[in-house]
Image 1: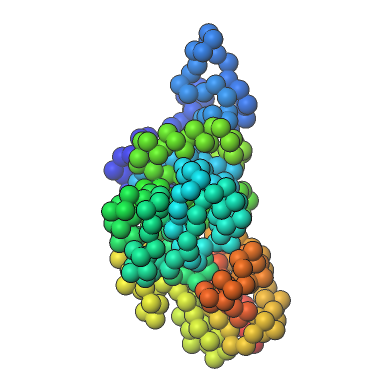
Image 2: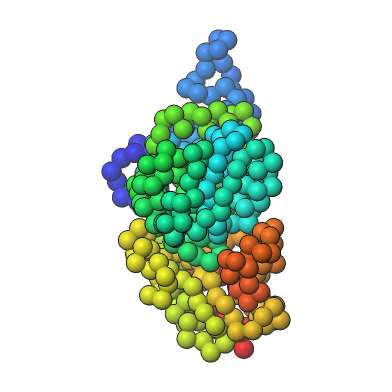
Length: 385
């Protein structure tokens, strides 16, 4: 099935990039567990397959599938989300300037500031919900804008269309990390982004059993440049992981609907809890960018951030008492996870930056799974006390 046809999301999730195996009729794309491919004559290969670092049929099926789901022409799969992010940064040269969304995954922050900044890339953090501040942060050498929306962990919503318009005017590439939404809830390319990035470990994989990343673009030139880096650096996913991701995209639309439904119920319940100071969820009308979320997303996602009344002691006590929610890093799996960003996922972010963003000791991040919502709410109530 073509990866760029007009079928609905659910149909593309199940079929795009995949056809029954021609030799056996197997309905699932086989795991081509091979490092190399036999050539008919020197340099005469079947399609693009000569060595699995360059291309592999199982990986290609997944890349085409995810490109279709994002409404893009080209997909590239990687061994992790940060490996995918690094490939985008390799589009730059020493002396280039990047505008980085101020609230991003801690690993993204670390990669930008502790790896690529040491290679001569200039980085400026900016609150992209403030368009005036965003416009004012551009320099003559700004070549890349990296946005994450909703942001991690404070769930700010960035107006992708507005940021894309400014980036285009300034001649900068716009890359959007779409991990928290998945392609089902948000498609940044349709809003003007040049590149979309995902940690496929999260909602795309959805089962907490595989690590990976992906980039999607409509730009032929950007694709060729990023594909060259993929080939040259070799941070490609294993074929088993690609098979698992293909398995998972088939149910992405169904899972995301349940994630959103459960998260809304949890957010509304905790918003009225006497021991919860504040709930941040894009689906609540109290969210500062609720209107933007309604406009650019078709659901509000499975991530909920709460501020407990109290401090580290109260947070630690709650996190030690949950039974259904698992105290663990990561997100987007079918099972509910809970974590303390200041100590866990964002510990590598400098303390002063965490404080400025509001990543405090009473902030707790929930990845609401697809269990029964009543059980999740009861679990949280018992833990909070």
